[in-house]
Length: 193
Image (cartoon, rainbow, N blue to C red):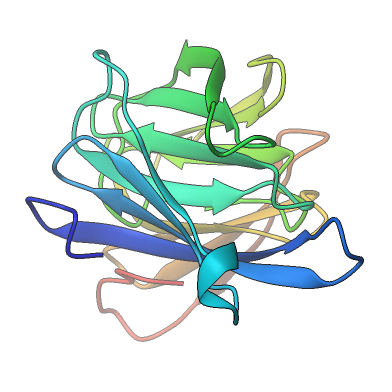
């Protein structure tokens, strides 16, 4: 992790199958230095590796998530650019897809449990949901009550929760794009869900 020249904004873990049938734990970091760092945390020193993923379009990276099998990684930068990398061969990483969402802020990116859907939100109250592999916009949701400060996507990618500065949790159906429920908490900003 010392390879980064600026702060780390998010970490992610995954397991990747080995050729011998075992698994290796992987760690990814999204950094303000415009790079994604990936480390193999294998038990045997000779099986360990690290790679730095960078593209000239990448800006300060806010978020990172592994694909379910650990052979791909997705990152979102502060400009709303989404980068999808294939790391099947860590010695030859491949940028397979880039697309643009709304400009997020830290804490306003969430992924479905399988890493197939990414939700990106901004302070203006807009959340966009994309299929990670294709960049296809699945849904765009807008909260007319004002800025949202945090969001979370359910493991199955079917439910999105947003939090605002008045302490309201809003539950959205991703498939329908409709508000399902509002829970009012204490009147304080919900900066994290």
